[in-house]
Image 1 (cartoon, rainbow, N blue to C red):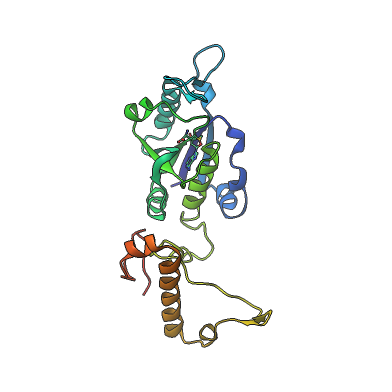
Image 2: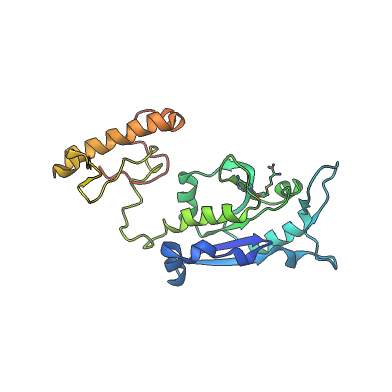
Length: 243
Ligand code: SAH
């Protein structure tokens, strides 16, 4: 089954953009996922094809109209009834690897990209829409957020990444940040690769990596470390632990 992505946007020409290259681009060309960028303006009903209007109550900027966006969402739902509809907004739930994994396991995703001041709030009462944020900062539009979300999903699709297991040990997959990597040259600018990694002792290497991951997470991301609760086999993202 192909993972079907629909993007509702005022800038369909922004897609596939970076997702037309490298891993995601190859997977797209191979038909492992599909991408449909749909112009929101096509659902406008007045002769100026307007999609936005001034904010009720006054204030700066423009607000995307609920009626126009609902028509666009309905169109997307007709074509892909089982794909969750996600609106990109800084007010949404922060995107996590766990949610990415769930989405990648599903039929696809419909992503609504905001612009200007964002959406008329009534849209979220009237349609089944999940609000997602890609972080605590403000973008000029939801398109780059959609690219981030799709990139994260597509790399998890079956047969997309070269080594099928390479996703399992990465940052966030077991609730921790990843251990550090090294490659040749053996000594670079006087710095050697940690001795344990050259030992060939896989149990020892495993233990070293686990302790590095724990230490780095504890120091850099106390929030993750606390949630992790010091239980190395816990896997909030749903990834398999190969131990
Ligand atoms: N006035 C809004 C920001 C609008 S930014 C506020 O203060 O909350 C314009 C659009 O960019 C948003 O509608 C949203 O689609 C997108 N956007 C901005 N920041 C984002 C973020 N952190 N995550 C996801 N989408 C974001």
